[in-house]
Length: 392
Image (cartoon, rainbow, N blue to C red; front, side, top):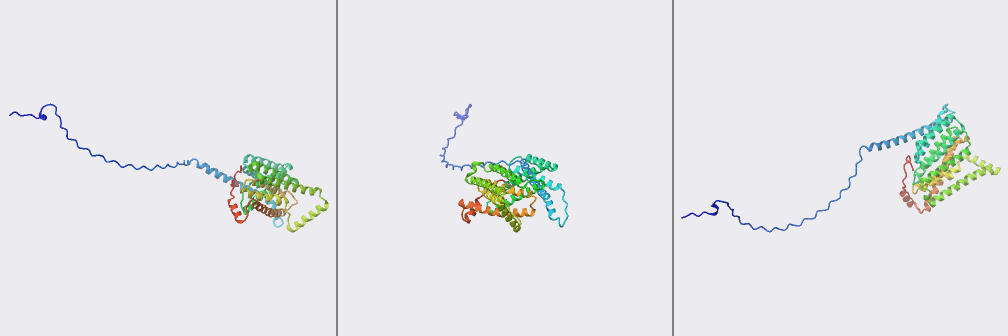
């Protein structure tokens, strides 16, 4: 029986039999994906200050503090040198103390230079140039001993001290702080009075007093014009202050001068007798410009500056009172104890009058009652640069 060959056994190309395909399972639907929460925006990274930028700032602050400390030490040393002859005169009965003649002159030159430098810094000018010029001129007057130069140095020092006393103040919302600022300005002007006396210039007290008053008031008004934003920031209150201050100052000076020149002998004699009695009872007589205009205007201006910049216009008339302080010792007939006592009386009377002016101003502006006044004082925080920083 013949054999039958199967296809896979035949020679040639073999063909594999495909396996039967399996039925695919139906895919289950995938659950919907939950939406991802939006990514929060990262805050921008602040650039860190480089290590190289920190040392210059520290060096600047350190140098500024060092210069301020040196300035205060120089002024204190100069004030001690100026007060040495006065102390020697007071203790001459008990102790013999010899003071060299160059010591008060050196103190006067130091105060003139330091005050001019501080005024340049405070007014935003060129303090180094102003201080160097003041040093050269005052030193030339002290070395040459020319009467005209000595008189010019004394008058200039008194005027600079009066203006610097005004610019050295800070805003004060409450009355104790107002008293502190007025005392600071008075101390600055008193050191200027010692320096003006230290030059030993032979000047007329009346003429030099009027000249210092004019220079100090004019300079203060020019600086205040910039500090109070000019005439556009004057306002009604500032206009009343300027007009009233100028009018009161003119009336006071004109009445005093007219009374001394054209007053009847009987009236002048009665006024002199009254002043002598007051001097015998109280020990001294305060100057009218100080306790009527200067100190009240300065106190009111310092208080108003804590709320609005128009207070600078009132502070400008404080230079009139400080000019009287800085020229007190130019009169050789006035003893040091009597001058100090008269200044104390003027301060007390001027601060009392300034307190009344401040309370009247707050009453008219609508702040009535103790609680309202405390709330208004707490809200009065108008910023100004520190005492040793430039104002402009």
